Image (cartoon, rainbow, N blue to C red):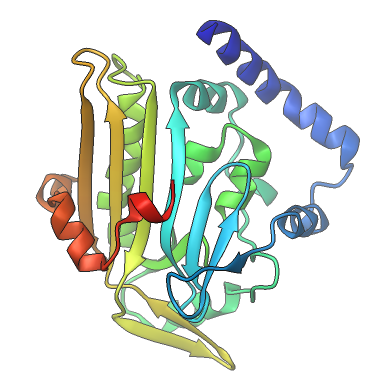
Length: 265
């Protein structure tokens, strides 16, 4: 049954561009806006300006005053990885372009302002990674959503510890090696404030840190595994530092003031 499901997902990946082209002759900003409008956000009690955003692929609660994700949740599977590899969506054009959630402001210009002011490059830092969601065109597009799945992240961390956690999730499902599990639960968010960048009425908070919780069942031991990371948002971060960023779950919850695994699941 599992092989049949994988086949259907991969076939869906191959057929998706043809279906999309037939239904939407122009894969452009109009398509993206219509896609975003399908999934409006609603108020969340997690904070005063928090909103819950749910789409068919992942969930997010964001602080819409600070314009940063507080907690996101996604279930990544071996089937997703195989479909992503088969589909091979290019990370260019619309599938890689950032957009705003319905009713939220466009943050494109404020990132330009931030990078003019900062001596270190500031990236649009995903919580739930593009590569982990690129098994489906719409999922890839929605992964590039300001506020709900992006924080202002120093490029050092973006291609350092953050990227290392994304690669870990792929490897766990068998990328370039033996699969450890076939299903990974991922919680990710941002915390704190180290700077606020403003342009006109829009102000975006650069978080002090990202965090990530990775949970899975080990196929060999049949035991649950939970890995927790506290990732300082600093330009000096790199992949090799990931083992140093492991923290106990109780420490992570205390830092945040809430349990992400209860808030979203």
